[in-house]
Image (cartoon, rainbow over all chains, first blue to last red; front, top):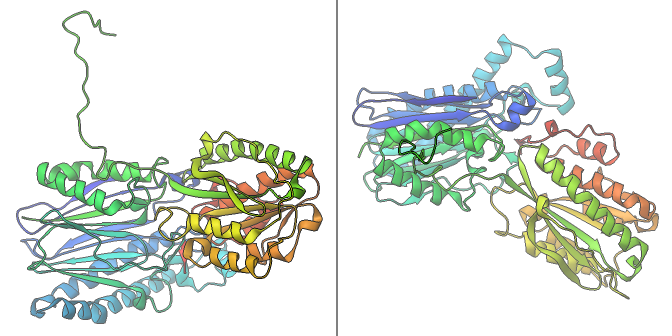
Length: 285
Length: 249
């Protein structure tokens, strides 16, 4: 089942659109879409926008991961909004990255962990869930395991904080394409870093783009169901180049209208079969 | 149905636009490499049985591929004796495989080290798609390695010296009880996963099917060795619901 491509509209600033489709493998086994996505516009001119996507882990030990991913998006947007208001006084990218590591990332981890504890307090595990937890000898938080890709987008700075798999693709205004977040060699497609692990803050990867030096056309954030479905190898440049062309020639509205069909193709049994979620933020040119 | 001969009929022309940025989607490749012992001792009934077993296994693997929703199985086959030689060098979709018989090498030794190196070269860094599932390697042999010196250990070390090789699911079928050795346990690298023994040539086909299906399923399901072992022992339920399970490091 696909959520229709959502949108924020209006002149100027950032234009955000998202789509999410439950994976064919999840449909076949009765599992929910364990991805989540959301965004927040902080000012009328949409100069400050927060966006997030999250992928709840599919393994049976993460039996509440769809809640974990939803909480990750909620708390990520909350923490991102607080962080965005502090960016105005910062003057170089290293400073912004250091601030993201010192303030944004710990806050995300702390508030997500607290939200998980509250959720668990409100709805303790059923006997079946508890049996699963005991079988894996896990702490309760493991059941909520999720990735998070968080975008904090402002007039000068675009900040990306990511834990776990998934992809962020930067579309340069000049047509170039880049994967701005450093690779994590420990991610092999089966194991991922996660908000639920101890020391999660240390596993976040951070990227900062200075828009005064690197004009941005857009940023694409996607759960791994998207990248794992792409026939092109490597896919980021192929997808990014085509997407840039589409945004320029057809416009953001045209892309928005098709985003849902793209995630449907990726999530189908012809693609990755996995839950697929995309958030695209387009900068007004 | 409209009459094409009339001037009123107009063909419906689909809007011409890219399917999606990047050029479309595909299933995730699951590279499945069979390492088949072609040493001299395989001559005769054993090689005939192995050929029959592989030919019997492939359509069943294709059926499994069709029934699940994630992987496209790509098969390669390496024969090895004194030296390794690719029998199917390039990955072939399992549904398109047409089996051509392997032949034993008269007087050939069972040198596994060079064979491991050959597989290592095939799946080494940047040789597989970034979105590929963990590769699976199935070693079928009727004897102990005859490599001299440290060749077996060095070859195995080469195979497991990079992420895909290290993460690869490695299974071994011993043809005849004498072939079950500590070397095959070293190849598997997981004390919870047993060497599969085909006590006679009649059992090869059955064991090969069980092993290949187990490997394929576990390739999607992370580190659930219990599922693999139960599959190998013939007690696994084995439906696609066992698959596609991501977990934390």
